Image (cartoon, rainbow, N blue to C red; front, top):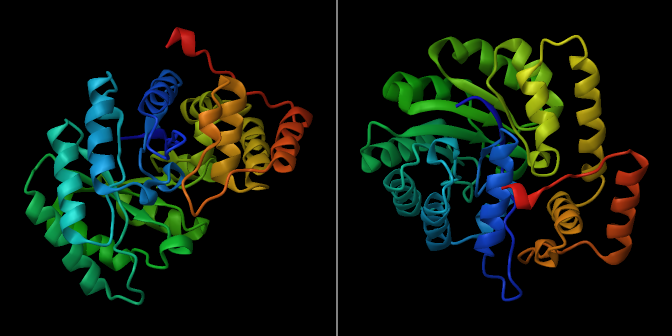
Length: 303
């Protein structure tokens, strides 16, 4: 698994059930833009979805023609049996790659405890085709993966420990992870396109980025052409667009942008405790996009 993936936004009906049809359309559009699908990630509101919802949605998306080889669902959670069950459901649907958070409720847990958790997941799933990507996001989870823990997991489980998404926001950690483990087939993804060029130049795999939901083609283009003479200029443009959305609550802002371009107002809805943009915020976002010359282009009819 390499390139660009997106934690796909999850649309909701008025009763807060998942709008499956809109989700499938978003997935097909992202794939058309050469962006893989990290469904149930942070910006998918993955931890606001139940175990049953996530399991059903994986099967639904595959049934709708979404290529399971381009999916990396988030199967992490605090309860070991839930993580095992959801990971098994993914494998049953033909999905081998999963993105797994550490169990994040208890803070200050040891590397030994985290190793035991991931060991139990892998052993109980019991499928040699499983590929686990470690989701390192300590600003949110307050628990991360040390280099020694990653090495211990690779030493024990080899290619099953396939890589990591580093959303820690510290380039030095991403660079160290690439340097220490990439020669062992461990794929390191930056957690934002802000670090895409640096990640690729260092030998990393790409990025798993929230704003690939709204700017997929440009991010994918840089990933494919990062040695081009204008690559740094492309990176700067990506940074500008990222900053537009980062100036607002990220998930509601991206949903407002998708709603605007698709005409589907259900896209604006988020699950509590998140709150949608108010009218003033939404207008400010749309004005910022216009001032920056950024326009989303989604041709649903061609999908």
